[in-house]
Image 1: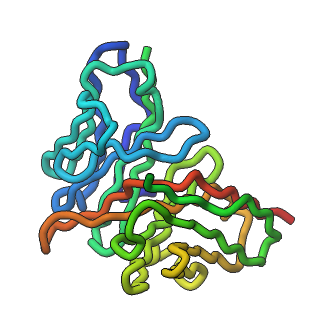
Image 2: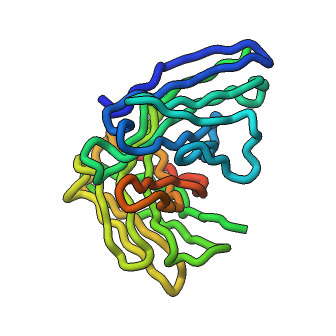
Length: 108
Length: 125
């Protein structure tokens, strides 16, 4: 089992706001990053660190953290946001990295 | 533009070894680490480890210690991942990813900002 826990699936109506969460003890100490993966494609970084977006990522994507939970929020979800989303951070040892199990986002 | 180009698909028998390459371009190779991440069919992402392209230091996932070796060749800006004693559950897509570090001395963090397209490794008798 993963040190970072994500809900397997989440759905959102088109244009609405959705929050995808990632839980783990290491998140009390380390920032999480978020990746989007569409079928048959490599992952793409969408949020890193406290709340940083790489160039080309729309500002409807944002990140936050509280206690042992990191969150990815999509404000005004679009059809093209339908994908698997993975969180990643340093693990509880602080030495290695870990990924969450992934959340499949469906845009209705 | 910054890109990572990986080698082609491989089919191996159980017990064999595989080496996957990842050629970087568009940035200073030695300024970043390269992580390797794999994804079994229908499964999530699994971090395998990283190598510093600056000094060759490595950090391997515990479950792969002893079976995996990551190396770099600076003149060609290429990273390699070798996995030995292959088993059927090593069947996966293997990705390389440029890995940056940020933050302060205490809570620094790593993030993977550029990914290769992946290399499919199939282990089958």
